[in-house]
Image 1 (cartoon, one colour):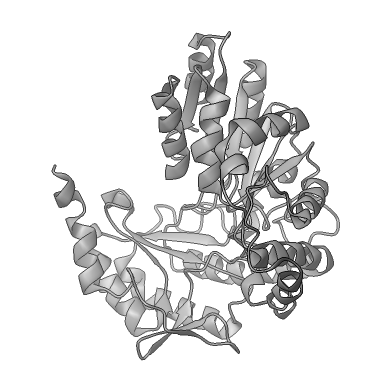
Image 2 (cartoon, one colour):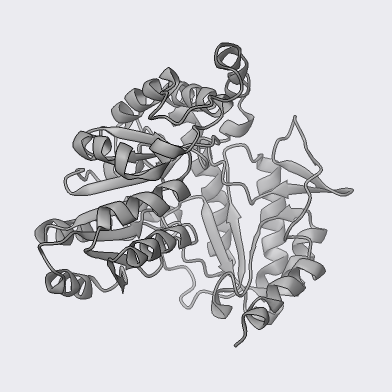
Length: 423
């Protein structure tokens, strides 16, 4: 099929629905998950600002003081001039993650595209089949630089173990995968994969962009099955950083333009020279440095209360989905709820109902997803109001005839089935 034919359906939906390339004219400052598109006000369930830090008054006020000291943007690459706020962030982040060390760079895309090729060298990079596109793109760059690219599936651990044994042991072997899945909200069985990688002496590279800030270590102080502190999937599972590099970002839960790697200090010092962003890229804007520092402070002081609210709002929606007998792959209770359409052709009617009822979501249509996964994705945040949850649930009831049903009504998990790391 020609490339233009593949994208024709998406172009059609862009013209016939309001969910692609929409111009958001305004966000209500009193009810921050209310957005205006043209003259139409909608409840926003497409935001990945899970903790609501984007509209937290304390965090919103933070940039002015740091900008007064540093200007709007440091002009140097970090290797040439390293703004001190970066070092403060890395120190606090290392402590939060309980990691050997951390390295902060502008975006996860920068990291994948430059670090994966460096770590893979002329060896083999094992890219999980459902990993985020930017991981695959970084793996492809590694292949272009002389590495061998091998695809594998998280459901086939035996196949991964065999492939690792067959790869040359005198060259790097890098296994790349997501942490919390950005579509299902589920954890991929990281502990078993880490065991295989350690047994085969391969390096595991995990992108937990969505999990960081939401899930964290298990603790008596936790206010939800997400765990405490939001210190990501490694700590949530009680795993170690031995043979593992964790990649995460502040652009989701922390609502700030910044990303990081948790890694050994020796590797950090090597990547400063070997990977391009530290050497060539300008750092994040001063406002991002300020909101990250403020976000880390708010997380220490109020993070558990925020995660508790997020859990209860998400539980209300998932419970309603289960009562309607609708299928969702989410068995973790994470605030991503994917709802496939009964038939791919129903996507137009679904989009029309959502728009008319004032519910803004991530419309998942072919070719962004396979045809049999067409539908929409709901993303909950701590800033969504109870009234917005009511509005969403009422709309889901109306849409139920157009959505895929679960094969076994009343089974398949639910919000009482445990936290992300328990599946």
